[in-house]
Image (cartoon, rainbow, N blue to C red; front, side, top):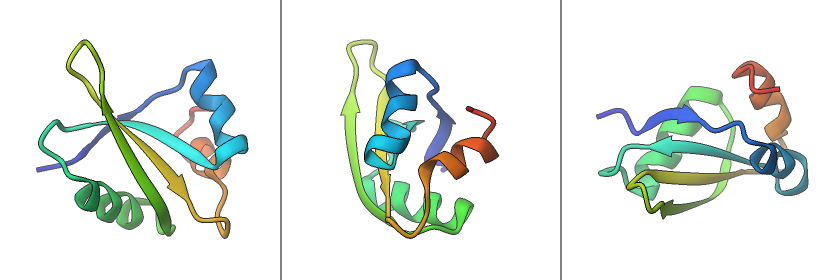
Length: 83
């Protein structure tokens, strides 16, 4: 099962790139935090500090992935062509 589905690029989320060093992804409903962390670290070669998840009213699971200070979330956003 692939946990990471696609990144979110709203104005609010893009503001969190620099402020919190956080990227937001829509993830599979069955994915756990450990699986999300492992998959993100493998895909982008960065260390993940923390993963928070939430489920929206439309039954979509979002993962708020905070990246360690050694890497920048804005660099990863450029790779994903969000910025």
